[in-house]
Length: 298
Length: 222
Image (cartoon, rainbow over the protein chains, first blue to last red):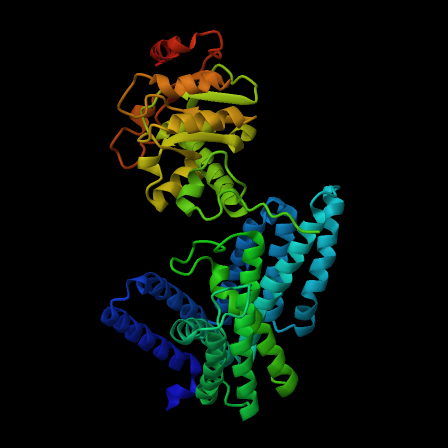
């Protein structure tokens, strides 16, 4: 029972169990298409849990690297990558956001986007050029706010005394939410509801939302026992709905740019952003929900 | 109003292929690593192999250094002899089947030896390079037309493409590297003397005689 009091140990054991069960399922069902993403998970899970076991500094470093790499994928896909100065400003701001989160400087953490937008306004002046600068500026603002600052909330979450359980729950629940939405859609999906991602179905989305709410209550005693029942319900809704909205947001970005995946770093998944699409939106909403209603953060 | 997105041309390519592409697409991470690797290599070569440089590299925007090939050290010695500006832009044509089939070797070749991929097994490769070279307005290429460290004669095809694309062909003779890092040896043998001779551009030599002219230049300077 003591292990249950430590969410990291319990989640590590659950993840290891999940790997074994899922591997057995793949073998039993002979579902060949599942092996590539499964093998990628075999690499990703040790990296995620390894960073958490090493400490908050390693977690902050991992979040920073993922933010920078994710933004790099976005910048390469949109062509922003040709504007090195914009990209460098966003990289620097991502490091700053995670440092502010790591040191628990909430005020500084909250104004990172303000300072970054201020710094970005200088780029066209320094380059002394107007062509393409509005687009570069706008994409950089999206980059720092959506991929940098939003993801840095994962670092800030981890420094709270009870935050580790919340981090683990959010990371695993958003990933599971994607899988469940896909499975419900495949099995029961009839009615398509959005042009942003034409394969999404009403049944799949509602099924994932219901699952996420149930999953939040299952995780409640382990990941965030300090919260009342409606706190668990709120987190379930945030993961279930926010995860899918995040997914659609990135799908919208990809359709605008005209690409299928943001990259190919993660075989079977696509790029880093294709994997982080739900987490990007869920992390800040979950943090501010818990902070606003329960004032649990320093 | 709508934004016009121009994804990077190498979007979706695996890293191994991105490392070998020419012209190189800008990449902050790879460019920074390449700069660091280049400084390390140049420092090590200068420290370990006393190099005598004869002749001077002609100025120009599109230069192909065409050298004899005896050792893995060849490209590194040439790199160390160039100016930093040339080092930044140089690309060394390297066999895809040897250097760009596995990621660790591709990383080593691209970062330390500035290698770019040339697929010698595809007959359309020369046509592709011909297009690239015609479009490229500036650059510096290092070419080993013998294609292998075990052969000494120049192959005509790549020379023909270079000449027809309007690149200035500069013959380079490398001597001493065979002893400094013999074929088959895992590591170089430091403190061997190396000599590098830059010849005059072969601009007035007819295309069909280029291979012979190069052969004579190499023989005279070894």
